[in-house]
Image 1: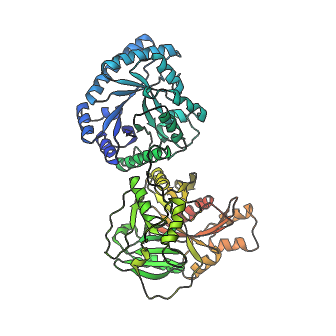
Image 2 (image 1 turned 180 degrees about the vertical axis):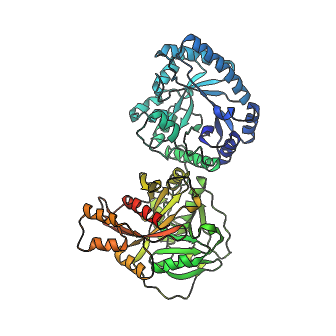
Image 3 (image 1 turned 90 degrees about the horizontal axis):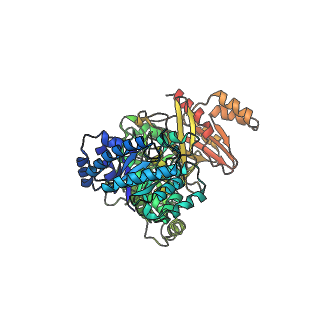
Length: 621
């Protein structure tokens, strides 16, 4: 279906918004009146600009407080409407949004509302314009879609139809059965459809709407279910986004527009309107890649953690460090800049790397261009919203070989339906073994999870990206107190937890270059691993004594257990499934490591301990 976006959904000048919408792949736009009023371009120039960009102008909006008012007020409204219709003719827009009245002059009189809307439609028809009447969720008397439709139906004017807005309908907590009435509206009388999601919040609906809308799939409203009802009614117009969001208003228009278009692609897939390449869910973390201008601090930290430098890339300054199934690449590259060591890339084990790349490209995440020697493995990578490169690589079997042919096909069949595949390239074949002294392992078995702090304006985009592009499941959002603000976090994972990524955003739009990332390493005995790390010269984060005093009040521990936790700075949590013990290293550049022990099927990330960890990290900066 055609896609459109309201200019109010993006930041910048009107010309910047139009350019961003076009580059993101939208077919059309809704021109928000304030954007036109603030533009130095004439309506004719805006019309020409849209045509040059391949954008249709699908809607002009809004007209407010028109109907069910006293005669003298309505006469003024018609005068105002005539001016707007003349302007729309210059702009080349043929549909205008009329919101249900919130005016104190409005009367609770459906017949009066229908009669005045019919007169308005008469005038609009003279200009070749249609009226799309929408029920605001906070409308004075008309605040539900079915009430707005009854008025439109009573007016019985060919130039008058209704506009359905997913936020106004769903924000009122409509019972799913209430939506079935949408299918009773003739499709040709649904003149326009506006789509928005929102996080579930207990607040005034007007403030909720004006500040917290988000793109479909980023909130908690059943936008997909509503869309199915609208399509069943026979609607054939564009799917248009109308998003009021304080963060989007300050973020760059280009990435926001891409995120917006991606949300509509995923929405159409979910509603069964447009198929996409099937998601290929990653099955594990093959490696993480650190980029640094000085390898010594990162190498020293990895050595203290029990990792061994086992290999070096044949043509690049990249070392492979390994312990168990946990692999860390250290890239002595130019991208580190002034912030030192940073996490630049993640290798995701995939049963079908090529299929994963096709899925990503279909959702506006193109494969990144890469320089590689002819003998290098042909690996595809895409960029996550925060810039982290995600490589789709073949799974490495426990015997160290690549899972190819039958092994890979067996995995792929469970996620993509692929029965056979050609030989898969082994990313490790690009590395040559180096002489090394095998370090004594400290008990690290694999990468448990990654915690990636997002730029403040890209959190919702990151969640949608990881859900839609990678096929990961998103858990509920969690707010974590920080000494200097509030952190928001939301984890995404695959079904068995072999891939876990905690996406977070800091308390303020501070220097994004200082965003900390951390790598959690799994161990079966966090006490032994922490002791070995410290004995090897590693520094563990010091946890305040007050924390462990509080633990003693909450839980019972074996003799000496809590004292050990005090000594090593180990934190503790439990849920309905099991227990969680974890501790942290000091930060190198932007990266620190977490040692974690999950027992009994614990599913969380120790969120209740995050305020203590954040405070302790602030204390050593």
